[in-house]
Image 1 (cartoon, chains in turn purple, red):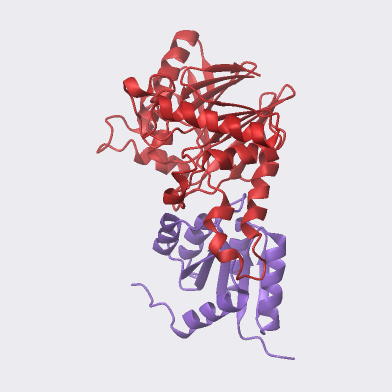
Image 2: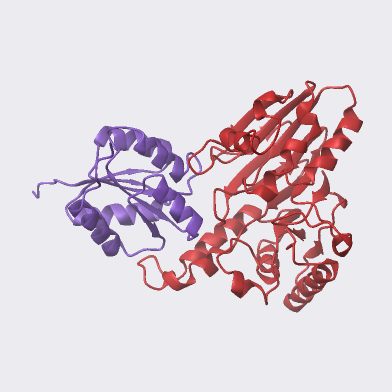
Amino acid sequence: MIPMDKSLVVIENDEALLDMTAFYFSEQGWEVHTAPDGHLGVALALEKRPTAIICDIIMGEMHGFDVLRALRSKPETKNTVIIITSAKAYKPDIDRALELGATAYVVKPFRTDELHALIERHLATPRELEP
Amino acid sequence: MRVKFWGTRGSIATPGAATVTYGGNTSCVELRCGSDILIFDAGTGIRPLGLELMAEFAKEPVTVHLFISHTHWDHIQGFPFFTPAYSPLTTLHVYGSAGQGLPLEKVLRGQMQGDYFPVALGDIEATLHVHEFKGKPFAIGDATVDAMYLNHPGMTLGYRVEHGGKSFVYATDNEPYRHTLKHLGHRAEIGGNFGRDLDREFVKFIAGADFYIGEAQYTDAEYPARLGWGHSSISATVAVAIEAQVGTLAFFHHDPLHDDKAVAAMADTAHDLIKARGATLECFAAREGQVVEL
């Protein structure tokens, strides 16, 4: 059995995309936890304290910006790598997500291997701790 | 259901001789479902609506349900001038999405800070309830309201109301995903139809509506230069309405650069497109003050 030293929480309301992302990262040796909406995603991320989080924006129950705000306000996830993924490709949305503390913003549809490489790059250069 | 257009303009109020037919006030639509009063957006058109409600209800209590599509200026700028908000006899329910980083109530409060307006949101005398969309349909009297996030910068909602066997959709400030994502689709595992699949979700949302208020801010000639601004061309909106088999499309959010002649020409374009497709869709350019009974 491959030891899993990296864990991921995926928050995404598109079931097919959630399954595909989870499958890919599991194959790469990640421990993957999934949540179909923002509320469950925040609870899951605070419980699991994953290495990285992938989060959608447009979700009915709690949208991704609110998830980001909630996660960045908690010490457990304040410095976790959080990648926002969305089909919204507008610059104001991208800028706002980064202002709110997203590590990066990836416009859908994306290649999962490129998303993985992006996460690995950010893990290799951790965020500076804020004062 | 009775629909009245109080503001049909997009982006910024555009009064003057060139816009007297279609109107210069920004987005505001009133929908009566029996005795329930629903308002969509609080652009500058909400000011005269407020005055009419004050005259209609005089000294009687009134409950108003205000649905905000999103909090860009042209959709909220009339709110501080909505007179019923200053009456203790008014109960005002405001619905919308949480903002990007701020709750809806704080966004509304922000535009009434002292630097922008002399009366604070907390000083209005109506009983105010702010409701953020939680992803599920809900009831107002005998009506059911559902909402869907649209493709526009910021968190933007479209609304669908069912009442008395009729259906009404208000979905403005929306751009087809397939246009904004066209250059990305071919290189991802989930394929080149990704944007089109997302657009299909919108078609499902408005499917079969008796009355669809959609936006068509741009002509087809203007749209390519405004790709990625979060709005639709007339042919895109007509195509969506035909695909969704809606009864009537009222297009609005008229561009401030479009005078009455330009808006009328867009209606002609729409009618030509419908005829060419052999569709039965009814379509018109919404006029300020126009009333439609469903």
